[in-house]
Length: 331
Ligand SMILES: *[C@@H]1O[C@H](CO)[C@@H](O)[C@H](O)[C@H]1NC(C)=O
Ligand SMILES: *[C@@H]1O[C@H](CO)[C@@H](O)[C@H](O)[C@H]1NC(C)=O
Image (cartoon, rainbow, N blue to C red; front, top):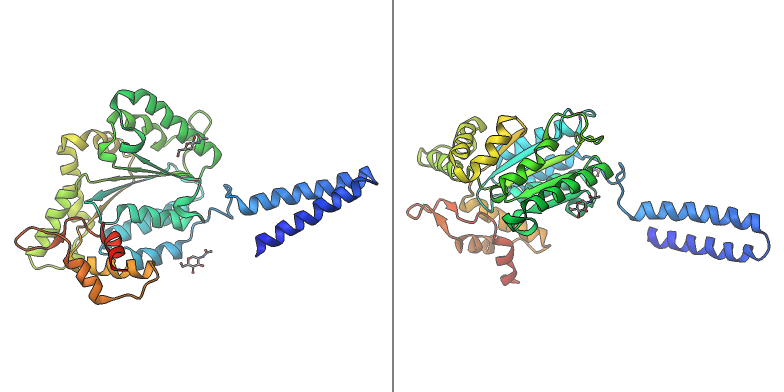
């Protein structure tokens, strides 16, 4: 509606410009000038720009989303809220925010990245200032490491130059070549400026399965001990996480170098999901798809998934990952 109005206005202005043109060059210039400035305003109105109109952190929104939409992740939820709140309310951060999210597939790592993007960018994940890199997709050939590395550095530099509040998400971080990670390290550090560019307002999010097994083990210990999952604290997992991550040859390299220099601000563990969480996921998916939530159907979907350990069937192997697509079969 608003957009239509604006188009109409431009049309009127341009028509006026053409009519006046025949008579008076000075008026024409003025009218066209107004038209051009209006055009610019319309452009800014319709096109995302690096301005508070498009980039404003909504703390209430993030809190509500984490509480309502992120299922079964009490630790992650708390850390994310504190980390992002603290960073976004600091007008002069000393370094970019670097989050490392760990856990098995389907536990909500991608989803949380999306919630963070939604809380900062009006366009959420569709924002031009949010960049997602997947090693398999963007950097598939180890032999091209040097090319990828300089390209990635150019991208980060170019995008942060355009907009300080840029967000970079690296999926499958454990599959990323260590050399590539070395390439981005300088941007994560405490530099005032690097080649004249400040990276201190940017956000970097790393997603990986690294440490996932030891998080599962801890959750299983609690379950076997008859303890409430909500009792699991970050400190219960911190040592596990760093130990397993350090000892794991595959993921050790990138972690060691990032941890040694304290470049990662927060390690965020994602717990494996139980049957009841999967049911909740299914209900949430129905609501998101604007369907009537159906408890029976949700339970049916959750029952169809595979759980482990085999004897006890406690945790969903794929978390909530396939729930959305499964739901499509029941339309
Ligand atoms: C922030 O998020 C809350 C909850 O989602 C929403 O009601 C509110 O309109 C948002 N505020 C802005 C400025 O977008
Ligand atoms: C920003 O990053 C994207 C990749 O997400 C890249 O295609 C683009 O060229 C970069 N922009 C600049 C100005 O470097």
